[in-house]
Image (cartoon, rainbow, N blue to C red; front, side, top):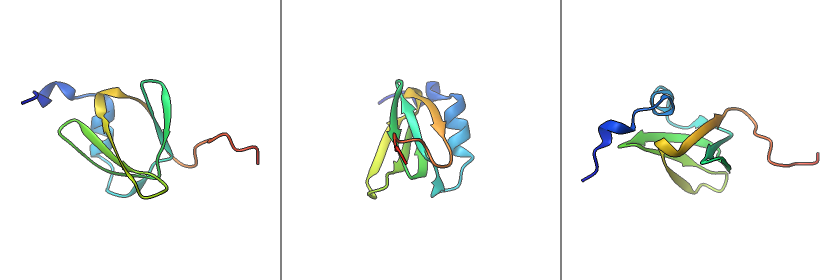
Length: 78
């Protein structure tokens, strides 16, 4: 069984302070942008997000480099 006491980082603390279904434009995981729509919860070093299609994204909290709030730039030439 993994030791989850070592996964504490600033993103875990931030995510734990957010209510479920909080709007999140996207996250950066190991430097790559991952679009999301909502934060769901965080448990045992795993962060759960919902994307625009309603799919659940599960991410290791230690791999999150950044979180975007509001409308994220997704390459639109609008």
